[in-house]
Image (cartoon, rainbow, N blue to C red; front, side, top):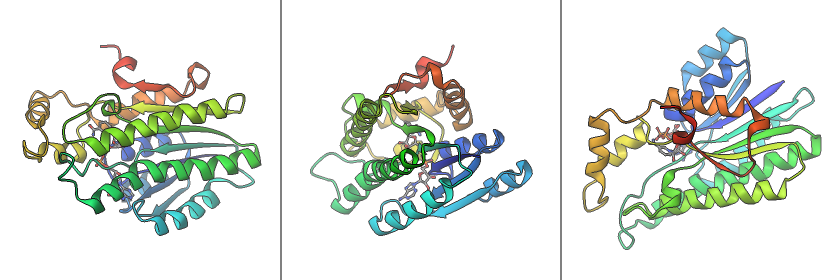
Length: 252
Ligand SMILES: NC(=O)c1ccc[n+]([C@@H]2O[C@H](COP(=O)([O-])OP(=O)(O)OC[C@H]3O[C@@H](n4cnc5c(N)ncnc54)[C@H](OP(=O)(O)O)[C@@H]3O)[C@@H](O)[C@H]2O)c1
């Protein structure tokens, strides 16, 4: 049996990725604070199993409990392959340094860095013990590669994920794991709504993002999820540790 563990499935890119795994008849383990009922319906139609684990990834206690549940659901006697997509992410706090709210900074790094690192750490140990192959996909952002005014935590968290991905690939050389980061480009999701709702003092480039929305430049999460699926369907073509960018994968 093949399992996909996808975080951040209640909406946006995570919802689309989860749906596309179900459509490929992969059993789904979804993780977010809110459950997405449409996934259960689709899984019933496709006759694949669906387990939702409600977990606030910003809460260390909930994360620890969630990890145990995730591993128990995904790694057992009948498992022969596991996909792990670390997609859940937050953009806030959007503000220049000096104006950052401490609790929000802690939550940010917990969701965007600590949770994916611990999830991979736990799943990889289990996979190697049981000799199960995995594909590990970390959703990153172009912001990892350049400073963005007002996004110090977001840019640095995504840069950390990129380096974590390349280090993991180095360590796992010769093992049967596919390891990559995927940069989805600008998508029409709630996260973009949060970005556009910022003031100019909080986020200097806000007008550029409003204009992109007005000009219809945002990709749908469904389209982006399909591009990711096409990529991971060809594991032999994948260079482990690399950051794959949506812009490089589409023929426009
Ligand atoms: N949108 C873009 O333009 C864009 C561009 C580049 C990269 N990305 C990246 O793409 C990924 C998906 O973004 P998106 O645009 O789809 O975001 P989104 O629409 O805001 O959805 C975020 C998802 O993450 C989950 N999440 C947030 N905080 C959580 C927490 N504390 N515990 C558990 N789950 C949590 C949410 O679920 P709950 O609220 O139910 O918990 C939700 O399902 C993120 O990693 C983001 O950084 C997005």
